[in-house]
Amino acid sequence: MIEVNIKDNESLERALRRFKKKWERSGVLKDVKRKAFYEKPSVTKRIAKKQTIRRAIRLAKFNN
Image 1 (cartoon, rainbow, N blue to C red):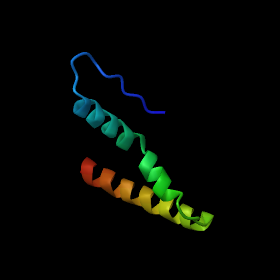
Image 2: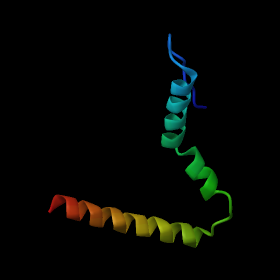
Image 3: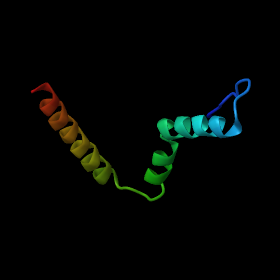
Image 4: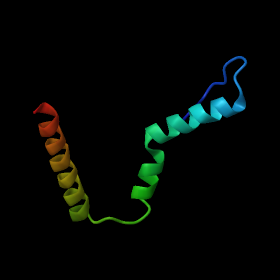
């Protein structure tokens, strides 16, 4: 559960903005979209493998 405590003299808009940032960073929306439809385990593994390859390429570019 995401909570945002409103500080003294803080506007509601600012508190909503902080809540939205926390909500986006928590990955709730991404998780809901990912679980909206059934995904076969083989597809899940394939996507994970692609992500690891991309991450390795990015790290290789960054280190060189």
